[in-house]
Picture 1 (cartoon, rainbow, N blue to C red):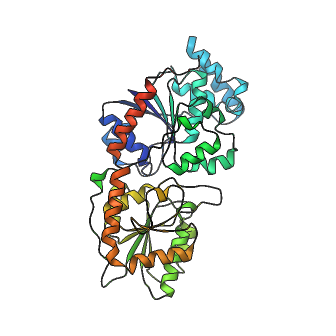
Picture 2 (picture 1 turned 180 degrees about the horizontal axis):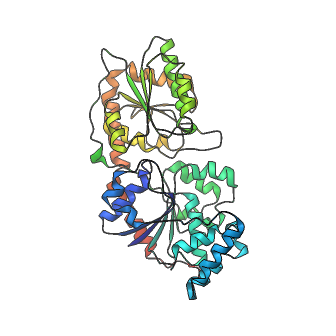
Length: 413
């Protein structure tokens, strides 16, 4: 099959969920193209070079700044095209397409997809990518059935900002919606997505890269807790720092390690200075292999996810799957799809979102009952193997795509 992946930014180290899908499809003999708006300046996952993914990627050429410069640029682009390609570009200027046509952003998108290939499946990596795919298909420059993944912010923060009807055109035309957890499937239905087009499809991890190792409670040193993720509000790092401080006040010293970077780093580092000296260490952004190396030296993962003030939410964070696969006990929250992976007291410990006292109790339940570590971490590994093995999930994804490719879909043009 020929499959197009649409995403805003590529390549980036953190977006391994769809990267694992791309490489899995290539391993299975399928032809994959990636269409990205921006080239990331951050760390790059080694699979990008290993699979030659930059050669498979087309980046958006941004129109020049200023209305007059943009008009001159558009005229030059039109004059260089004839026949069907010119007609497609003119459609991208249709005023009925609103601000996307007026700003020439849609014209730039259309120019990038010329001559207008047909794909067996168009995979939108996030909800807004699906909106763009539907618009481009309406013009006729992108052809094929659309599958839209939904991962968290696209049904929370994005809808709050864009309005409840933001996905209405995509809900009418999109062939398949792939939320990463049942919680998001419920959100999709509530937002107006036809239930018969929804298939929950988890993001997974390579189990071979995360070998299980039984953990024991540390002796002769403080327990080492770790959080991993972009330093934004929904990751809950501020709440984790409160836990470290509360434990210190009770005479329970811990080491707390933070892996990741982001806009809140300076604020969180300032807040960490209120914790006992040396109790908190910020590692910054790391590549996946480096993250795994840090996890191997830890005793437990602390993942106190919360709904951000702007509505931003998770799906099921991959770091939970990775830690559980490695044998790390996890303390996390009843946030979005997390309870679909972690069962309190059986495969980890759960607290309510934003409940500081509950988080402290959960950490103490972990630290004070070392006999529970073996059965809980074994159950956690089994849960990941059961539902989040990327090889099984990619086989399933191929089946979903084959069913879509066998259907005749409406196309613009």
